[in-house]
Amino acid sequence: MYGNSGYTGEDRMCDLVCDRYPVLQVMSRFGIALGFGDKTIAEVCAENKVDTATFLAVVNMQMNAGCNASEAAAGVSVRALTDYLHNSHGYFLDFRLPAIRRKLIEAVDCAQNDVSFAIMRFFDEYAAEVQRHMSYEEQTVFPYVESLLAGEKNTAYSIDVFRRQHDQVDAKLRELKNIIIKYYPSGSTNELNGVLFDIFTCEQELASHNAVEDDIFIPAVERLAADGVRDEKPEPLSAREREIIVCVVKGMTNKQIAEALCISAHTVITHRRNIAAKLQIHSAAGLTIYAIVNKLVELSEIKDTITDL
Ligand SMILES: [Fe+2]
Ligand SMILES: [Fe+2]
Image (tube, rainbow, N blue to C red; front, side, top):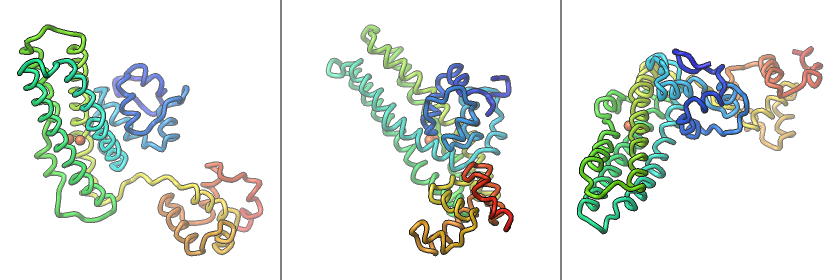
């Protein structure tokens, strides 16, 4: 269960969601589907091919659940975190801010007075600022991270440049909210309250997004750049690669595999190389153990081959 040290992979996902419902947004940005029954966080992450340490780092930071940011940054997958941030940008730019704009227009009825018009202008300038902020991350920071993940030495850019210029995108939204609360001339309406609630929530969401970037993403990328290592989390195997493993552990040669799967021997070799890189397993005996443990084959199917190894 949840304690002072934050959530762990052993906690049940449904307990996490019921205790802290904003985690639903974190889940959808990681591509985790609902309908997980009583499974643990680690089990649900594994099923959805999400790195558990990265998911927990973001959850514990956003929930302020006693998380040590530098420890969290050490264990995360930079690729998983970058994908998460990219999906968050899509959420703010394509969904959250346009939805607030629509409600704001309805609430302030901009044809009616100059203040309404000025409020809409303030909001549009703010949305453009957020767009610029996130575009910079998408077009400059993330490609830099991709180059590090590909094992390239990139000296043209440094994450320190990002750290120094990374500003708080939530601050101006707070200002807009305060202006409306303090100075909006008309009385309080359900529409205006509704949009103010949304702005309060969006402001918190943006502040957490920034905190994940400052306290987890930047230190994790710094480590990646310093160590010069590739992302530590292997990519999942494709269906074709699993088929090839089954053939290999059954003792088939590359030529036999190529004929059985109607592909060239060259393609089989490329798949085998990729399998070895992803699993860090380079022998048929090692693949046999992997295939049995992961239930790709039954022991009875390969008994003869095992005695030949
Ligand atoms: Fe961002
Ligand atoms: Fe940012």
